[in-house]
Length: 240
Ligand SMILES: [Zn+2]
Image (cartoon, rainbow, N blue to C red; front, side):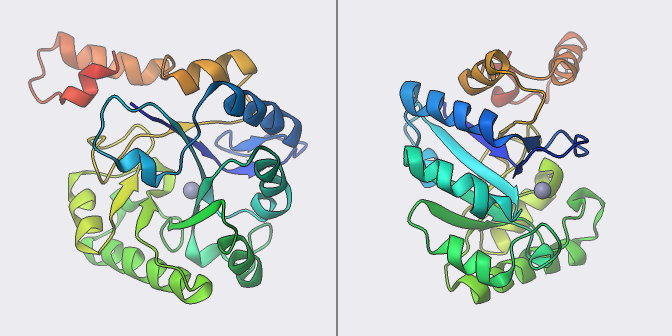
């Protein structure tokens, strides 16, 4: 099993950003140093291979914050670690986010793959089928127009998806999609591990190794097992 990490912004705002999504450059630097010493860091594409015994760590970023280019990329270059950057296409050019020129620049970097992250960063599980389809298609085409790259990977905003959305993303031409501990943990809802300012080094190491899952998540799974829920997937059980 691979570990897929998800970062957002590498910055030190005075107040924590909602959703525990900021990590200081110093902490990020320490985490990358540790990863490059102790793990095989691979591209996201490599984690799609069929070898279930393969063990690597892939790094992803969501949303498209400007500091991904100005702060994170120089640190990633220092350790030569690849990332996939899932960009919310409608946020391009807004305050604190990459401009179209900056997105073009980061997309050309050999360590960077660009993926989609919806158009307006909405909760997909609350959208109608038509709205979801529009977001999936338009975000892909906007990013392709800006970067000139093929866009066929995506991450669900807020990590949220369900079986219907997984099918829809396949229908819309994506090759794979990632959630955050939601969905079936298969091709269109692969699980990722979120990281934020609350993660000290011990918790970071536990998260990378797969030993850490949120208490709430485990409680839900245990409750389902105790109630004899027959709908649990193999993937649900393998994490316990
Ligand atoms: Zn996001």
